[in-house]
Length: 217
Image 1 (cartoon, helix red, strand yellow):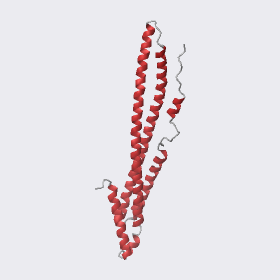
Image 2: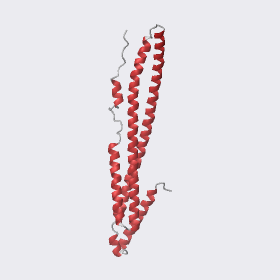
Image 3: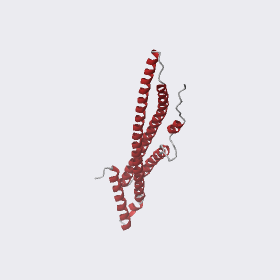
Image 4: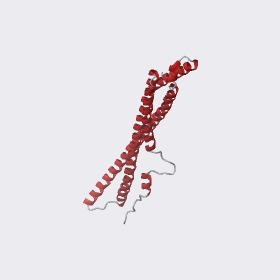
C-alpha cells in the first residue's frame, strides 16, 4: 500500500488521461473530445510536479540530516570548550593559592593556561561555525519542505481539473507549481554547499595562524 497520498492522485490522473485518449481515438467523445484534449498535457504537468516534489522531499531530508549532524558536532565542540575552561579554572586557582603563599606558579602551568586559552578560542570559532551551518541546513530543509508541499497541492489541483473537467483548475495548479519552483530554487541556490577538497572551513584556517607563545623566563 502506498504511503504517498499523491501517488493515488497521479494514478487517477493518468487513468483519466488514458481514458480520454481512448475515447478520442474511437470517436466516442464528439464535441466533448475537442474540449478535453488538454487532459493529456495536464497529466504531463502532474508527472512533472511529482518529479519536483520527489526531488524537493529528498533534498529536505538530506538537509535535515546534515543539520542534525552539525548540531551534534557543535555540541561536542562546546563540551570540549567547557572542559578546557574547567581545566584553566583549576590551574588559575592553583596559581592564585601559590601566589598567596608567596610561591611562584610553575612555568608549565602558566604555559598550559596559555595553550588552553588559544585552544578555547579555536574551539569556540569551530562551534559557532557549526551552529551557523546547522541553522543554514535547517532553513534549507524548511524551504524544500515548503516547495514539496506546494507541488503536492498543485498535483491535487490537477486531479480536480481532470475529474471535474475544469481547465481553470489546471491553470491554478500551474500557478501553485510555479510558487513551488520559486521556493525550490531559493532553497537550492541558498543552501550551504558541502566541503570541497582543498577548501578548509574558516575555523580551520584561523587555527592555522594560532601559535602557542613560549613562556618567557
